[in-house]
Length: 81
Image (cartoon, rainbow, N blue to C red; front, side, top):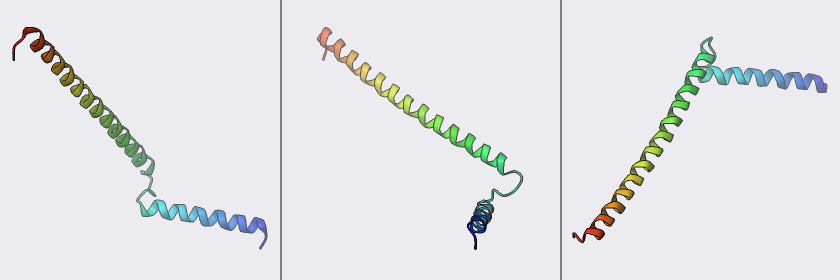
């Protein structure tokens, strides 16, 4: 077997393997590209939701901390206990 024949056989095997893998996960039909776009959209939305939730948690913690500082300063200045 020549080097060119071996390369062609490997290329054909890789192509068949890729097609089988796509078929096994349900991405071998005409709607596969649409499905992948939808999956990417869901992933992007999930990432944005995580980022937004993280920011909201940090913002809330900051407000609580600043509120506690203000309350402490108020009670310290007024002498109320």
